[in-house]
Image 1 (cartoon, helix red, strand yellow):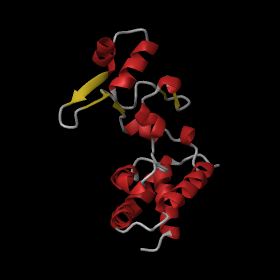
Image 2 (cartoon, one colour):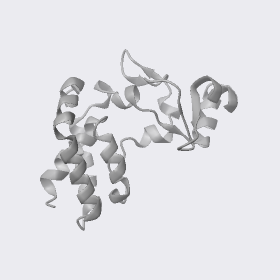
Image 3 (tube, helix red, strand yellow):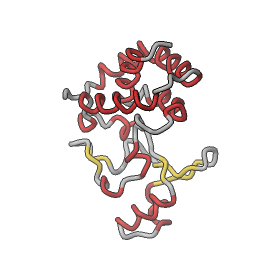
Length: 167
């Protein structure tokens, strides 16, 4: 497994992003019969090639959404009230109706080693990211279209999907 070169990744994104989004759009409209099985196989392959700890781009440029369950669990971890936790680190987005980080990179990311300081109690959104092998992949096409530009694993998944699925 090679470390992720973010500079190279961003160049690839600039070159392929439109085509990859188009492909995913077509895939969502006309999914092959075994799409979820194919996605599971590709998921396994992707994680043999992509090292998240050499990247952490998601933690650097995106914010997870924090559910009430996440807020309760993480605030308990810090031995603070849920309100104190929200006041210190989160804001409420009225449009999406989600609690999100006030700053980027994520306040819980250790930039020296790309590790999460609250990994055991991290938000569910982080634990599931980048959602490659979710059941009913067609329900996550819009998520993958967004994540292509942020996540080398998602980018690699789409590359592999293009190789295997004729549209």
